Image (cartoon, one colour):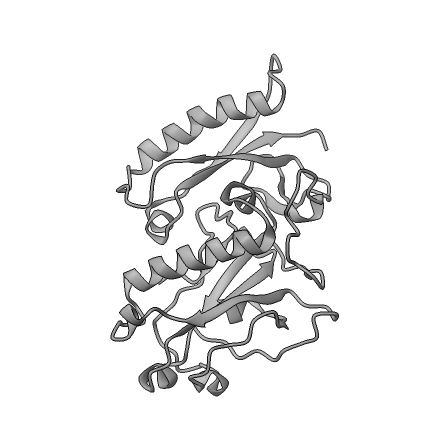
Length: 262
């Protein structure tokens, strides 16, 4: 069960936080059966987002923080007898946390994938699950995708991606010879900017295979980036496509990058 979803640049390693598994290190604070509180803030580490449950201490949202709980609630009754490793639960979490984040930030999925934001979800500990706890918690993270450093979030995150002129601090660029380079905010010096995405299928579409996904992405991005640049005589473009693990987690898009002179 995949837990960490960028919003959502994976560059083939996006979703690194695995759910289920051994919870021997789970914080006993998560043994509660109560649904977590929303609009509270924390500072999460990479080790935290690798774990399926979390009880990191809260901090005031006016103070430096890199994570905010933007959604939480009880799971549908259909999961009352489900395993924590259920694929159906993973699908429901992906759809729910993504949709709620889009509404919270004022962004569509394409913009979300081209942002410097990611999300992670947590559930009850094994002990709480055995007691009947059935809840989820979705946390917004500043940074995190493809090894990008975590950054502090603003005090208020609602609608921070809404509108035509989104602050470059929250848009993702890359520094280096290829789009596989270091991910940085577009407000920093960079070589590539993520400018568009391509939708490769619907939720029910079977995975087309690596070759098909890569070829379709390459063809679309060549045209899309050229249009974004204003149809220049020559230009450089790049693309990020995601494999079957990402597809199974719910991601049906690839990302197109334009070479910049920044």
